[in-house]
Length: 209
Image 1: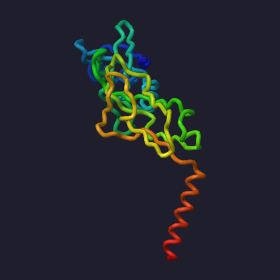
Image 2: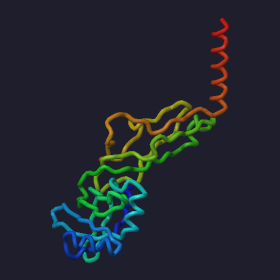
Image 3: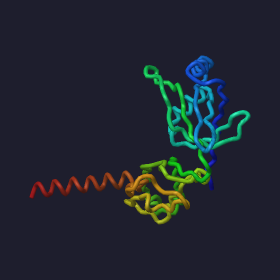
Image 4: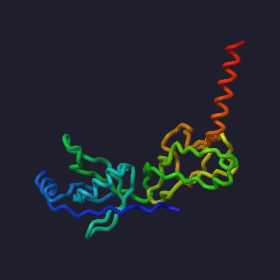
């Protein structure tokens, strides 16, 4: 199932250059530009508060947006640069690149864990520790998955789940070459305490000998 692409609303910016950009900022907007995709560059304005909210939410540079501009066809874009005020660290200009559905992009995708009740390690009181709640994948812009799924069936205490253990949707691949850890099942706290006590006792006996 493809992920729903979030909308990003903007208006066409009349005029170009520093004067038009300064006027946009006085009006409570952030000037930007949309380029690529075989079309002419399009100067736009974005609402400052809405843009700031999205920036603070994180992953802005790796999120694919459906750009909606009055009088223009919707287009999928990804941010390729955010200029900020050197003192206030607030956005002053944003660059977006148009993408075709066949373009490949790096996107963070949420990890879902299913069938936890079918994991013996969980039933015994083990704890699922999530190392990566999101994984960065290289995907087609027109076929971004809503999530990747980790099947917990048969997982025991002590099991470590790597990216290689996950069946990725067709056309997706991790952006990191190494076989990184996504999650593990750690022992119940009571069992860990008992093991620690046993280890301490063995150490004391070894010292006495």
